[in-house]
Image 1 (tube, rainbow, N blue to C red):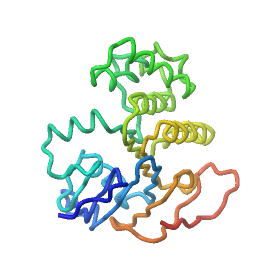
Image 2 (image 1 turned 180 degrees about the horizontal axis):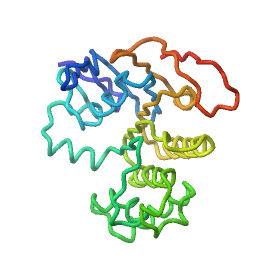
Image 3 (image 1 turned 90 degrees about the horizontal axis):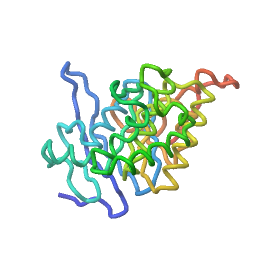
Length: 247
């Protein structure tokens, strides 16, 4: 078994995954992510981006291949150890905001910290600080049903950043936001990641979002390719034609 490179916080080799309906999602994808790097995984919808992030994060065991985190083999872990890894070291942002309806905003944002054993007061302080940074602090005591979808997504992003994870997986994290909101939230996300040395793996089908990353890996039909054509944001004022990004 080949050991992963020392400077890669995440390393995967020859990942294969097929959906239950028989359609292939990943066809032998290998990837390395350096510590503190913001890596964009781009490609059109259905190219395997979400499946790759779920395999790298231990949510979805690959049917073939290896996944390593800090030289520890994730692919040999059982469900309990993978769950502990996701709770203690990883953060995740879905494209659609999902919050606990019985909790208010700051409690939702602080939840991962409290699940790790952080005291309620300390967890609340951290959550409120991040809520302010994402311009949602004035909603701290509201319930999720009182928020707009864009506000709920900001809370989800806050929830992922508050515990300062080693690796943050972001699957189209600004999809529910308007263009101006997307730009602000992405700047906050990338600035926070760099200042806290958080490694980010960002899935996107949008060229402008991918351009914020340190490096880009392109997928097409579940395989890595050198170049993939991505459209600009739908609300782009420039109305540019599709542009190319190289991995």
